[in-house]
Length: 131
Image (tube, rainbow, N blue to C red; front, side, top):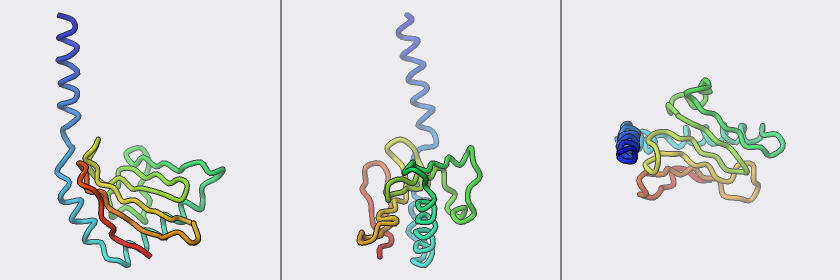
């Protein structure tokens, strides 16, 4: 009896946790519609955040708990993480169905600089900008 109650509650938690996931089509369309100039500005901003890291520690910004920097506020981001020449901005979704912007080659001379968009739910990614 006790085990079935625990399993019921776990199932309920997973069901409720699934609410709010998915429905990422608007976020994907918005990220694909960003002009190349805006993507270049985003890359420069993220590169400046990476340059401020101390002792090679990652910079992590959780926006429900912290104010969103003005330079990325138009994206309505949920989370930002910058580490070791890479970064991502979580835009939408949860668990395996996330829409993220990934930044590669930050402050790394000779490495290709690019921004890619993950399409969520294991649908791969696509390059939005590269230099």
